[in-house]
Each structure stands twice: as C-alpha cells, then as structure tokens.
Image 1 (cartoon, one colour):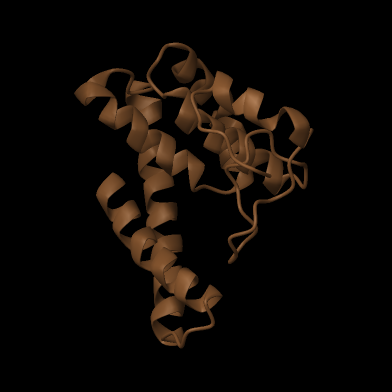
Image 2 (cartoon, rainbow, N blue to C red):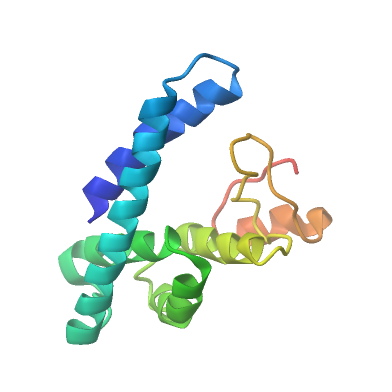
Length: 154
C-alpha cells in the first residue's frame, strides 16, 4: 500500500510544483495521475478496512511500518473515513506507534477539510505553497515544538 501511494504522489507533487511556477505541464499526465491516485486511495481504504476488521490496528508489526502505512491510507482518505479512524490513530500515537510529528498531519488535515484553522501549520492551500489558515498563530511554534516539529513563520 505504502509504495504505490507514495510513488504516484511524488510525481503528482512535482507536476503541481511546476504548475505553481507557471511552467508548462502535461495536463493529460496530471489528469491521469489524479485518477490513479484516487483509484489507489479507494483500493487502499478498502484493503485497510478489511485488515482492521480481521486483525485490528497493526501496532508494532514490521517495526511500525505497517502502522505508518495504515496511517497514510487514513491521511489520504476522505474526511468521513479520517473521522471514523481518528480515535484509533490517536490511540496509536499515544502508544508511540505513530510519531507526534506525523500525527499532526492528520489533525491539521481534518481541521482544514472541516473549514477550520489548523493547529500545526502542516497543511497548504491546494496547489500553492501558501500555508492554510492557522489558529492562534502567535502560539504556533510552541505547539509545534511540543509535537517535535521545527518552528516556521506563519
């Protein structure tokens, strides 16, 4: 699940970055990647749902790689799927199976998808390098430090 997910996203990010720099991009390739990413995400969500129902959260399995793969599937899922599994991911974070600096990705993504300001500054406005709105920017870096993130300027 993890390698397929990340390979497609890596290429797509390069296209978005080129597009943001106003460079010519292959729109057919971009459209094709968007469909492939969506199809892969949906397949991964179905597979994860099956695995969770049969085996539960992967925990420390495979040196936490399985937990991180499950986390990424949830991170890249629609909001309802993220909300359904949020408490499970939060518990995994509390047990040290998902590190704080990754857990905040999901927290921020959910908030932004809900139209709320994020807490940690990990989400960007779609297709740009502009950080999505942040709740209480004055205390952003204190929150980031607590979660093991480097400071940023909002």
